[in-house]
Image (cartoon, rainbow, N blue to C red; front, side, top):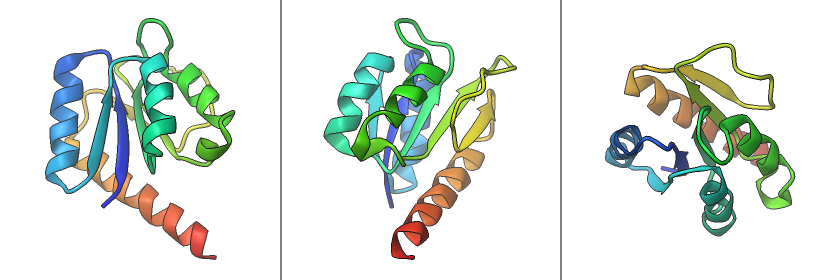
Length: 122
């Protein structure tokens, strides 16, 4: 399937969504916060990044903006998740409102992976 970087400061959410993605065949890297996400993103070269909005140290919108400044990651789709709306306007592929059905996340990751693959082959 694809490489997903999942970022959430809540261990239960991170572990549950990570298990859902792994059970669907994705290779998942977990990060506890924004700074860890940026370090890991460069190492694992994810195809999709799924990130919580409200986190200490660095929030999701800032992670999304910083990802865009790293040349090898600039085109990686970022999906933000939040229980609180509105979310600041940032360049993201999608926004999920917590709580959400995990099947929605799986469809979204698959769609984004398909879009990235077709964009590379064109």
